[in-house]
Image 1 (tube, rainbow, N blue to C red):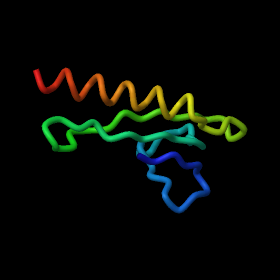
Image 2 (cartoon, one colour):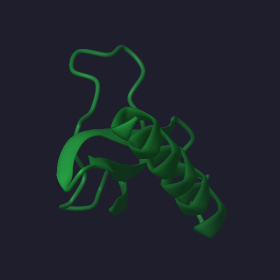
Image 3 (cartoon, helix red, strand yellow):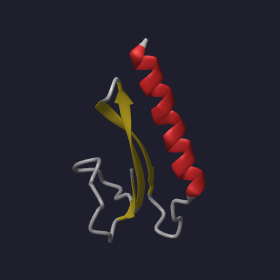
Image 4 (tube, rainbow, N blue to C red):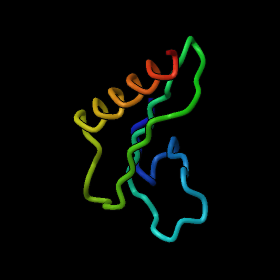
Length: 72
């Protein structure tokens, strides 16, 4: 689980060569049968909007849902 802003050392550029640079991101791994198969990622272009607990929970819910769907 990663919640960072562009200035943090943990920031990972998700979209390469994108015209609009994203300032904030939340990244949660999608896990199926113990393996990571992708990630649920929320991005924000506004530097003033810090990702909060709400965005983290939303991304966790999405990752959990997708992981369960892939198991079936």
